Length: 311
Image (cartoon, rainbow, N blue to C red; front, side):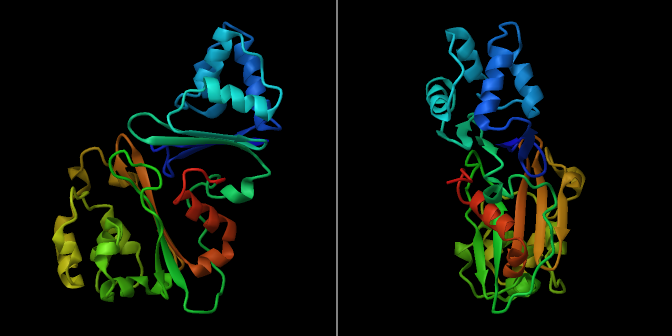
């Protein structure tokens, strides 16, 4: 079995499409494509790809179209596959091929769209890619002061992949984060706007992030960072509450499609922000959650940092 993952903002609460394919190797899948749609000149390449991969994949059809047009022989090795893809596949970013994977970064002029074929020898490195909503919330006991990490898979304009690196609160675990957000003396100018919003939306009585995330679901997007978000917590909280809107007031957004869970050591939200681009994801977790889910945490942190999870 091999896996296909399409990191696409157009689809699903986790902005990715995952397919399991019956082939023994990535090379085997491409060779099967040669056999089923290149050798048969009457077959519909787009229809075959949609049936195999669950929908359109930007630019992927071009390798099979060129093979038909130019009578290209099917690759016999992953090195031959790499050469064919380099010459005949349409993509606007990067192509990386090895014995176990094909990784492509492209751009449809709106957002960046990576996709990956890989075999089951690599699944430990890509646990988040294969995971559905929600992530598991159990945790393990860990000594020490701890730390909390915020992975915000958000974007603005077309900068859609790895726009916001993970943000860490050292010495704070998730059960104490709401109180820390209310009282922090950190330099707020270094914070991403999402965390400024979260800080402002934590109420004086909140002892976790659940209610603040529910409020964020009803907060319109700001074109710029309002100065009020940098004020003392009471001022920022009053300002943020005044901005909350009825769900029916949003254009293109559907707050009812947002998914949200807040547990002791993991808070997670897939917020619906656009009728066109769909959801964006927030994950806030501490070292006790990491201790229980090391592969998943490592994969998620990598996913938020680089486009290529195998890099």
